[in-house]
Image (cartoon, rainbow, N blue to C red; front, side, top):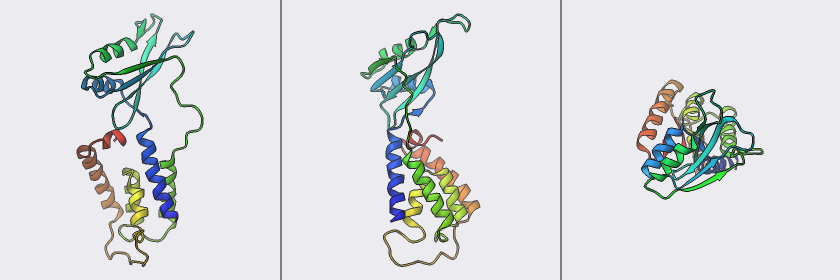
Length: 207
């Protein structure tokens, strides 16, 4: 039951991640607008008394929403006045897609306590790895490196170790398990392969 609960937590964390905006360079916004990938745009506008600062811009249209910052200044100290929203709106006009633009004077920063379900699932799986029985397929160090480099590794661990979740019999450990050093190299290789060949992987899990 504990392994099942952790698996559900990790899956719920991935779903939450898909809906959580990722910070991107503002150049990514201009590139996405040029490709026609952006469907909606929310721009934070300065409130009363704002002289200078970095304001937020949120956009949707990819696998995961994103946000960035643009410069705003009414002073001449840094070559101003500067309002980066003008460049953003110009890019919207030239985008091949219809983009819904919303201007907000309220802060776009999230407020209140943010519960990261995936992080809790990852930590619970790590505690199970440390305090549980010896894994069957790889050493604990090997699984640790997979945990560090591959966000879906905790899900694979609770499903497969030390016995596949769908089996009730206890299976002995393999005579030759994957060790930590090889797992460190293999996990980096898997990250490169996934980021290169799996659509949306780099967007969901920036590397």
